[in-house]
Length: 141
Ligand SMILES: [Zn+2]
Image (tube, rainbow, N blue to C red; front, top):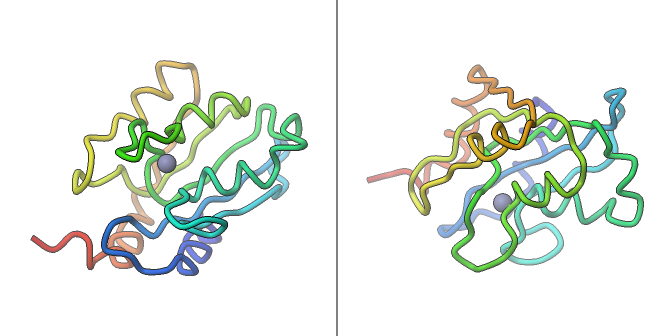
């Protein structure tokens, strides 16, 4: 998760979206790909980006894990496929996140959605403060 956090710092600061980092590992914990917000396309989600990089060899992700600094989205205002659907389609077994998505933009049900689909969901709250710190500009009231 520390690595996902470092990756998230590469995301361009935006007033519309969180800076998120994601890291994919195979079933043995070996790193497969990384992604951050808006890395390949403006508005692209970190999880989406990492998954897209291995789209041609998706089988490597079977029973693997995605580490993401913020809860994967269950709903996108843009109408794009939400990351939880992409994660399920990729055959991943586990999602590790630092921070549940704050309710600034949409009401996210990523965790519940993933758990209901049989995915192991792990939260690492010890990393939440660092993620919040990086996204402070979006959270001010
Ligand atoms: Zn997403």
